[in-house]
Amino acid sequence: MSGGTAHFITPEQAGTLAGLFRERVHRSADAVAYREYDSDTAAWREYRWEETARLAARHQAALGAEGLVPGDRVAVMLRNCRDWVVFDQAALGLGLVVVPLYVEDRPENSAYILRDAGVRVLFIEDAEQWERLRRTLGEVPTLQRVVTREPVADTDPRLRSLAQWLPQTGEPFRSGGMDPAEPATIVYTSGTTGRPKGVMLSHRNILSNAYASLCAVPAGPGDDFLSFLPLSHTLERTAGYYLPIISGATVTFARSVAQLAEDLQIVRPTVLISVPRIYERVHNRLRAQLEESPPLVRRLFDATVTVGWGRFLHRQGRGPWRTSFLLWPLLQRLVSRKVMARLGGQMRVAMCGGAPLSPDVARVFIGLGLELLQGYGLTEASPVIGVNRPADNDPASIGPPIDGVEVRIGANGELLARGPNVMLGYWNQPQATAQMIDAEGWLHTGDKARIENGHIYITGRLKEIIVLANGEKVSPADMELAVSLDPLFDQVMVFGEGRPYLCALAVLNVDVWRVLAEESGLDPEDPASLRSEAARTAVLERIARRLASFPGHAQVRRVALLPEPWTIEADLITPTMKLRREQILEHHADRVAALYEGH
Image (tube, rainbow, N blue to C red; front, side, top):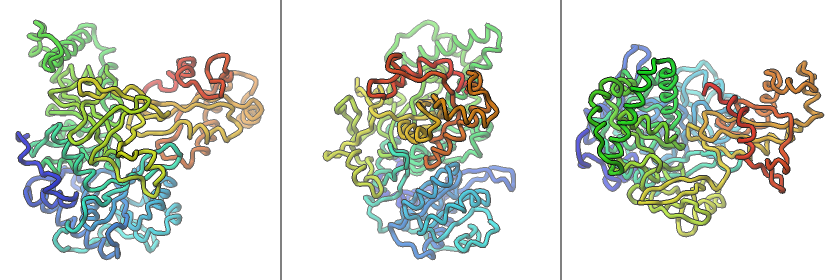
């Protein structure tokens, strides 16, 4: 990585996101912009800035032929790849508003977003994706064109393959004439209702956030980002796509999460942006392997982490120098480098956001020598609000606010943020916008926090919002209300904070359970029936039907069926019949642990 910030493109120089792309092409035309795996040749292929711009210009010609005008919405539903970037930049350069969609989302939810945003052009992967979406797209009257990366055998008049849709050439890439304050994208995020809300982010919102984030944790032309979080995730889009354009770094698109371990070895990235779940998986694998190792190996690993953590605290000015530090070169050779080699061996910095990172996991990786920096934000903030710096890193915190962002503690200990990164508002939802952003421009995060020595420490949530391990947010109360409309359920509680998936505890109505049990060939009077696989499967199917209108990540994967109701006397519900969530989880700790066994 080259030192300093001279190679950065400032928001003033860029103007807009398309202006940023144009300026990077001008400065670095022959440098490698993107790298991805070509399955046809079974090899990794590099793409330079100039050729990427030429392809974006062809996309602009194709979009122009659709009769689109500035402000029209177009959507992209691709896995991470160069075509995602090209389509995005082409649309932004024409003043269009890009709506990102998750590839794995439920078709009904995708159709809702397309309909709500009034999308006119949709870019998807292939025939498999088309088949999943086709039956719901009739509910989107504005949709005039569906472009597929791969040819699809279908007579739908809206359908075109990318090869058919793109002209052979295009005019030079266009990026002028837009107001930086205009919307660049509408990102749908889960709210406290079952339906997602569209977060409107302007060019200025995202540019200011990406630039300030880069100033906090610098990167440069010598860096290689490995991109695997979905680009529909605002953290990946801002920090893993726009930020590298500002800095002149290269982005390599991972083949898949399943192949991430292998890609780390091949690509050997210097920067990784991830959610806690990835670090937790590596940590859990390490611990599992250590359990099967001789005691000497376990002691050596623990000693390496202890010494490495002590060295980290000393560098941060929060711990003394110790004679044990003299052992570090040996411990690094025997343990640290071998573990770091699993991440490619060249990792300079690893960012973590989207959900809280376990302090134990952070301590292990930092102790092994990884520069692991935790940050915090939300889609409505473009998304970064605060992040730890290499020279000022307290893993228990989410760091100081980035430049240009003000923070303060409001009523009930709520963290408030204000700055150029705060969204324009929710698409077509002025009331929800007013609830989120007050008259003075403060964004209400819904998280409780304290601020000490300039660092922000998240201490809890005002609202009952679950944040999964991948950063997705769900409202358990909304899900529980939907499930409880089925007479089978007398009581139900959804949980999964920091976990890879949602689970539920359920108390069934005796009469309805009797009917369901007999239909499933079970004895309703036998308590063992509630623990049977047949019962769990039947109940999960009914839960899924009640949650059909919720986003794909807001689905219950496992359920425990309980024989006794929660009562006021047992201190499991309040006098107003509200669930005492922590007490219920503690009361059923064994059942909860079993639901996440192996994860």
